[in-house]
Length: 274
Image (tube, rainbow, N blue to C red):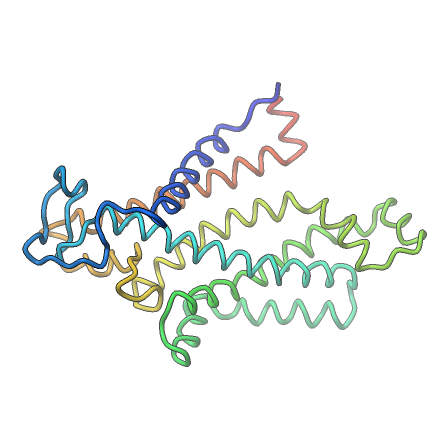
């Protein structure tokens, strides 16, 4: 029986734990996150407040739970946008290598790469205002060329193989070959890249929320919790440590999951682990 890579197991456990917390927060939190109680501000951990309260008397545990929901939702939808638009573009570019379509797609990718997600978010929010939706659009737009390049890079070598030539001889079109034969064989690359972009999406959402371009109050966000805690870093450091630690552990888990999936899905590494 083949052993699973340790990184895959550890990463899956960490990622599943945060996902479970986010799902639970949809129906239950220890306290309402919109409730402000100045008389309960900066309370230490206790039976009533497991992790204490912030400067407005809000329960930190509840805010971290909703923050996980916000970060995961933003990153997940943004990755979905990248896959849904980037993969078809990459497959089309590979199927028409050297053509005008290939050139247009790849130069368009280079143009998007010239603007980091934070710059794209500033441009979007300058027009439509800051919100979680605009953060999703900014991160999602930046993910499109990433998946397009991965899909194109993985597909190009496959177009030279004999079974693809046989499919073309049988009368199958480029689009059908891309869907039926190319896409299944690059799925492992896309899965690994998705986990990487998911972790980067968590970081991007936190960064956008930190500068006020992500989820807006009263919706909690790990990045905004860090921003609000920076003035109290010396008097009550746990206000910054807890959301910062949540970001670090979540991203670490996703990176371990990505490394583990790469090892498990790579045929050469599978033989080594067997």
